[in-house]
Length: 99
Image (cartoon, rainbow, N blue to C red):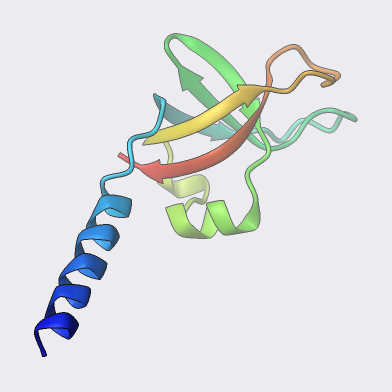
């Protein structure tokens, strides 16, 4: 019984660590990009005073509860600049959550 209790305590501790995930940046999703060009579309995210364009996955959009009426939305995210993007402000969002 002690081993089971110790194991359950360990699982609870590990699960709580995932909830306290620290992401690299804070930003604000400001609006959807409705432009009709080859490289356009996605969501505008302001990070440290610069506006970036990101294609969020359907899973990310659903987990945020994101739609046109939910912006501006403060978020925390892990991201990197997209190297071979046709626009200079395009980023890849690895993880994102509401702030």
